[in-house]
Amino acid sequence: MSQWCILGCGAVGSLMAGLLWQSAQPVSLLRSDGPRMARDDLHLQRLDGSTLTFNPPRLGQDDAGEIQRLLVTTKAYQVQPALEPLIGKLPVTTPIILLHNGMGTQIWVERAFPENPLFIAITSNGARRLERGVLHTGNGETWLGAANEAARANSALAHQLAADLALALPHAALSHEIHFRQWEKLVINAIINPLTALSGERNGSLLARGEEIADLCAELHPLLQREGFGQSEEYWVERVLLVASRTAENYSSMQQDVANGRPTEIDYLSGYLLRQARAEGIALPLQQALYQAIKAKE
Image (cartoon, rainbow, N blue to C red; front, side):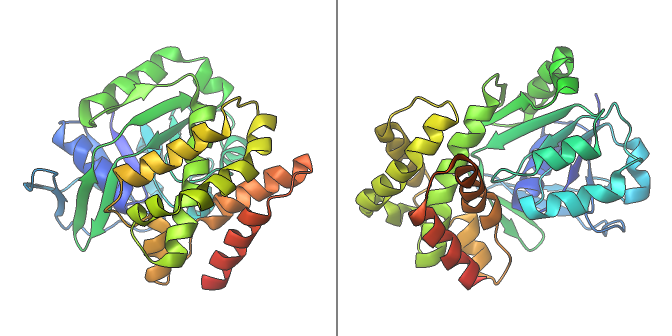
């Protein structure tokens, strides 16, 4: 079985590492800033309260030629600086799977690694980083889809990656509508994340702000239609509220970033929407206000 290499060992990356290790799949960790990581044990706290202790191999950038599958779970703004040192070192046959919030990194990756099969993955599994590991906070779906011609031309690889992920995760499957799934998660995150980051509250607090969410979805609807998505405004409101309900006890990743004084992914959420809308001549004043408010927090 091919080895997974995870680049970006935050909450999601650590969760993926633990779940892959638990399913007896080879997995290694790669630092995004160069040197190998310390070989300390990591801990996955499962949903049932039990703990898995695991210790995958650590790689450095000089080991790039050994990587068979690269799963990138950094923050969106870290993707380019994390991957740049691998240009010319990563085998062209190695698939790259981008798994992060927001949109806007794909074009650069396609240009920097034109021959590598590129896949997009999205997940709704919940995770929170601990001092020496990760807490799995909720099961969710994971979808994988081809993002460039090299990936689309290798359906056997796509099916194998999805099948191997399905061995490790509560749910994983191949999607031929990954662009829509990306946009769906983008809309949900561009509403839930900044609103909770500004209020400092859990996701469930948004269940009492239905009118505000409806206004945000109504503003985005012309852009979504221009992108080719025919769903009604009500559909988008229902999706946002459903996720807020399912993750009611969770703090969003942006809320945690703001609370801990870290940079946020706002440029790849609201910022991406604003750039796409500007190109289409569409105004998004509500998203603009959220973007500016988060930038002020940063």
